[in-house]
Image 1 (cartoon, rainbow, N blue to C red):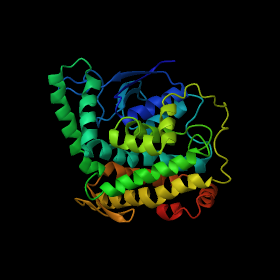
Image 2: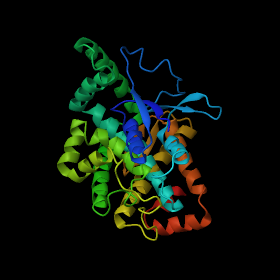
Image 3: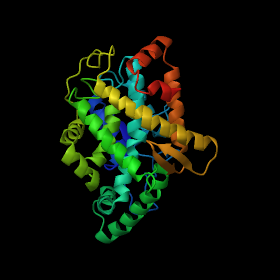
Image 4: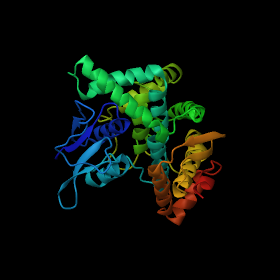
Length: 346
């Protein structure tokens, strides 16, 4: 089996998401770490270039067999579902698969706000990231070169906070939601080892990816996770390599979709009352060409620059829901009754 080729970085939560997912699925891969010796040379110039430079970047054949640079973990991992057999990360039940899509999206698009916020808002976190991130790309660089690269990397990432949504207006909303999510996940992990049962889903790996930064690397959130939620700290380290996890060849191991556990319903309430309302607020600003997302999220004022990609995320959630059969929609409604999800999707 030919190894999948990709470029990534140890500090990229989406790189970590996909590496752990490929290990679990036993997909052979060959990764090259993003490297640069100056701010002007930050990509692999000898390889195809993606339309938008994001990590990880995969080098995959198109329909004509030509190698293309492909980014965006969500469609890539679903492409792998058709190209590699066994150990699926998508629940076989359509209603659970939709909830998995929603939870994966939350990890990728909302939990990443916490990751960026903590890493680039607090001085201790900025100092550590600024020191370590450039060394990942050039381990033999001199201290003088690292100092220059550290300034470049830190300034570039801090400037992105306006799009991620980390500012003085949103600070409390982001931090409160992070701590609340940790509490909800901690309760859920006491009932089962993964979000949708006895086997990991793509949502687990999306959340894991962000938590590799929040739980394991950045000092401020690390103190929160390791101090108050040691179960989650341990869970993140376990998800690093699940290649040896025994999983049946059939679809067993997923939750019985006749009834969702209350701990999972509590997580769904968080998506319905926090994440989807944020996506709607952002999409409205993008649609209207507004200069600012300005409204209320989680009962507090919320402002950030409009984020066109996340407007697409809301569209894709709607498309996933529309693709469900009427019977599956009815079952989803019954499973998530009183969570606010039906109202959020309307």
